[in-house]
Amino acid sequence: MMTQYGFYFDATRCTGCKTCALACKDYKDLNEEIAFRNVIEYGGGEWTDNGDGTWSTDAYAYYVSVACNHCDDPACTAACPVGSMVKEDDTGIVHNDPETCIGCGACVSACPYGAPALNPQTNVSVKCDLCQDRVQEGKQPICVEACSLRALEFGDIDELRAKHGSEAVSEIAPLPTADQTSPNLLIKPPANAKEPGDETGAIINTIDVVLG
Image (cartoon, rainbow, N blue to C red; front, side, top):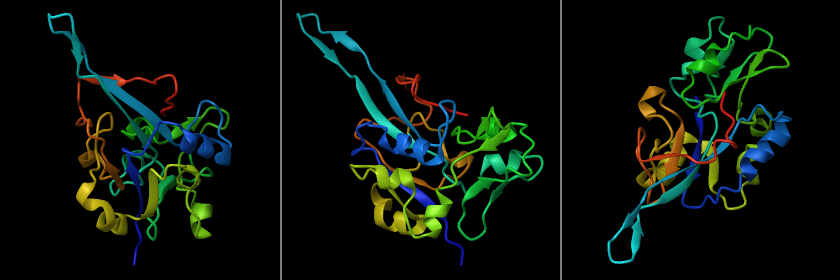
């Protein structure tokens, strides 16, 4: 029986410390141009003059920690012209074969989450493989283990849905709609979360976010 792995992210716990992203970069020895996990700060709102000497605001901000979602319908595998990007039958993990990758970047362009990236030194596509080596040893992905506030959880997506399904969604701004790739991602949204396609806010920390 296939086990489909996935992530649960509790946005009400995340403080935007980026420890998950930094732990991943360190464990995978990634350069400054590549990140397998990003912590996105999304916010917006305006100040309103109440006309009586006071001001009010509807300002909001929250964090979204996102990596490859090892989707049920991954856009990267569909886009790869040589079949280098594959989804494992037994775990659902999506990864690239560096031996057959031709460096065309089709997977990079196709993924709405910006998960794959083209390594400029090797001209090969690279991405999160869910720390497959650690998972095979019964360990957690390094990003999950590193999160001090336990905002990230990893496991069988069906078990995560049974545990968190009543309070979780699979899409909030600035992420794409889930119907594009059916991501194996559950999110406990913050109280001020916006829907995908929201135009009231923007990514605030663009200088920190490395997308393929």
